[in-house]
Length: 75
View 1 (tube, one colour):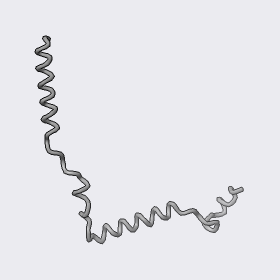
View 2 (cartoon, helix red, strand yellow):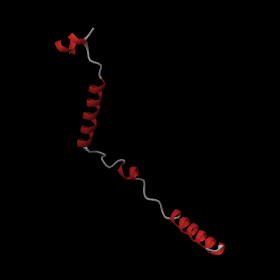
View 3 (cartoon, one colour):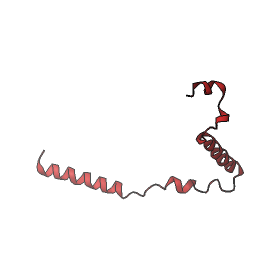
């Protein structure tokens, strides 16, 4: 392959890449989703239940919450 052929191939590749970069970008999906559940009581309930679940999962159990088997294993 001659140097001229190599330069031509490189120029074509650069032109192809440049054209791909100039294509319009896709819309950000988050912009489409934000607000799509506004005024939706079911979604508000999902959020409430999720918060309640996470709060319970992160709760440190009280001594009274432990059953007898768990108390035996404690030092």
